[in-house]
Image 1 (cartoon, one colour):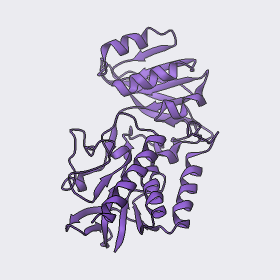
Image 2 (tube, helix red, strand yellow; image 1 turned 90 degrees about the vertical axis):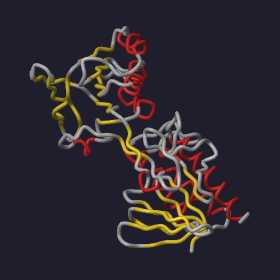
Image 3 (tube, one colour; image 1 turned 30 degrees about the vertical axis):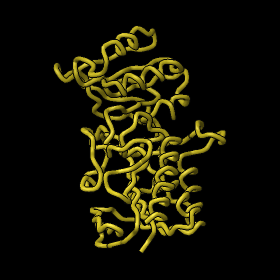
Image 4 (cartoon, one colour; image 1 turned 180 degrees about the vertical axis):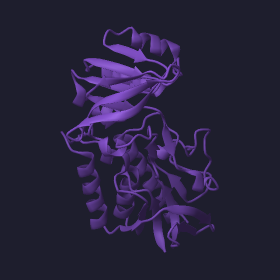
Length: 304
């Protein structure tokens, strides 16, 4: 029996584990993929307070070492179900394991929706990015493509246009799905243009780095190639919260519907990080959630 089981080994989950361990609680962290989550894809992080520069992997490795030094147990597995037995929560995994805890912190994060192209995953961090705030400075005075047509894509393109030589929006529809005013303002900038009704069909590489993309017009079938130094994919995020809908409300997009207190409708179950409803998803907000959720879980255990 653990005091707290944390589901997810990203910045939110590992920070939650750290705060719980520092409060003398026993903690198990279950992570189905690689520890670190989305931040692991960032080759350079320059916006984390107190750290001039680090890679996402360096941050994740240091945080993992820190929680293990403090006594966290680690399991590599996928959680398929949580059963609430009141004072005890039972966690079941894909490999057939079962664990018990007094409290649960769900910190499963999100995954970026990908284009499904050959070699795409290998280029993440080597030409393919998802966050202009995180990686935009790498492409100063260079040419980048932004794939997508919603508000997220328009906002990413707007940030990139401040420093890039050229920003090219690639949208599969003949119109943007984001706010018309935002699109109009963006396209009025001299270094921004859009290619509409077009999809990316292949990635062009050189020495393992992205150098261009192949395009196809959805109406005419015409193909072309576009040279670029980087590509930002902004076609949506996918939360993976379905196994937990019996314990916590989901919003219309599948995010755990919780506010800054990181509470759920189930006593003893808390949420943290990008998997919950929020307007800003950054490394700092994930770690903040982790600390809030952990302290709430510790208070719950101490009072019950």
